[in-house]
Structure formats: structure tokens, C-alpha cells
Image (tube, rainbow, N blue to C red; front, side, top):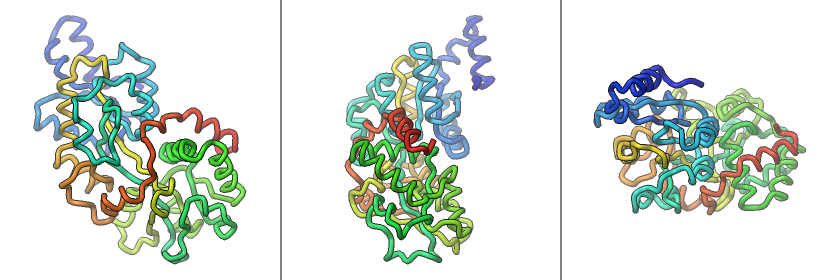
Length: 331
């Protein structure tokens, strides 16, 4: 990957001693969030504050690895990540946020170390066919999916980052042996492999499978276009690891010389306007109160009641999860 032309030009200007003040005022963001969703928010931030941004997009894992590789020489001022596992793993790289920063967000989304702050939330859900599955016949627990009655009827996406974060949380909560046993049970039950969340939902609609394991916000993209789309979604029983809450969030890079503007960007992301945009356009959960809920999402109160108790900072052991997925033959 290469830096955007604007960043390259700014670097030349600095080297020549030209426009150093303007370059210092530019906020460099490493974004693991997709450009299609967040670029309008960043543009609005620029319009409202007058602060210029230079955004480098990539997957969360790519950006996290780049930050670690660059170390103290990183030009990044802020990292906006897709999942908390990466944020937790990068906690040593981040500056501590202002006291009380995490008190601004709902408890289920908080980082106890106050090194990063959640900007939106989503949950893992079970999607299912409304044509072939009765809502009253849904499994109570995600571990129930290894039962013979689900044989060949379930989809998953082992290469998907959110699925891997879920497996990491499963390991943290139930241990490696139990996680391995569940994975092997699912494989033995002929669980069908798809490349991502969306293809699972499409496979259900096409009649290839009856169930899938995805993030909550994907289904809304289909139902928004077709009210009769033949897929619905549900959570497992309260406290089940299948209801894992995942968060996107942002941290300020400790070596940044532009922490003040980075803090302004975080403040903007937690503002009612930005939270409303993320909720309505991204089908994600707001992390603050006072935001009009998305019509297709369960209430925040319900999410907090059913979510498993997992410290999101502790689901950063991606390497251990990848090793386990390789061991059972899923990667």
C-alpha cells in the first residue's frame, strides 16, 4: 500500500521546510473501517472543524500490523479499527485518553484501560430462512448447532475477521479444548463454508442452507431493498457466547504530535450527529444514549441483557485463533 498523494506532497513540503504548519494541522488517520461508510463522516468532520485529514484505508489487521511495524516512526495520529481485538492488542501503542472518556459510552462498550473508545457496536447473530425455519424452533445456544438435526444446514465464514474474533472470545470464555471440540463438531456436521457474511445470507435466500452466523448489520442491507427478503435473524439465549458484542473504536497513537486534533475527531465520532449516521446508514448500534434507534435492530437495553460477559480487550489473541483454525482444517 502507498500513502495518498496529499500525504506524499505534504512530506516533500516538510522536507523543504515549506508549509510545515499546514502539514502539522493535517490529521493522519489509519482506518480499518470501510471507506464507503466512513468517508462521508470524515468529510463532514473536515467541514465542521476546518481540520484537514489524510486517511489511509485497509483492513483492520493490515493497519494494526502496519502500526506495529512502523513503531515510533509511524505518521499515524489515530487508528479507527473495525474490532476491539486489534485495539486491545495495540493498547501499548496508544496514548491514554482523557480521564472519563470511556464514561461517555455505554458500559457494555467500554474499554476499562481507557486507551481507546468504542465508536459503534454490533452483535453476532443467527440468520435463518423464514421459509424453512420456524422462529420457535431456533437453537437456544450456538453449541446446539452441532446437533444432527442441523447437519448440512448451517453456514459460516472461517476467514472472516468477525468470526475469528468470535472464536477468540469462545476460547477466552470456554477454553481452547471446548472451542476445538465445537469447531470439530461443526465440521463433522457438514457446516458449509462461505467467504463472508453477505454470501451466507444470500445462500439462505437461495435455499442452499437454512442458517448462518453473521454480524447483525448485514441483513438490513438486503431487507432495505426487499421487504419480502426471506431471511430473518435472532440471538441465542441470554449470556450465550453466540451473542458476542463486537465494537469498532478509535485510539490516539502515542507518538502523535497532533493529539489535540485526534481528540477532536474522537469527540466528533461520539457526537449525536455522527452516532445517528452510523446507526441509520451502517445498521450498527450507537454507543451513547439519545440516538434514534434503527428500526431493524433490537434495543440497546436488550443487547446489554443478552450479551456474554467478555472483556473486549482480551480478544486480541488472533494468532492463537488462527493456529486453532489451521489445526482443525478451516484455514
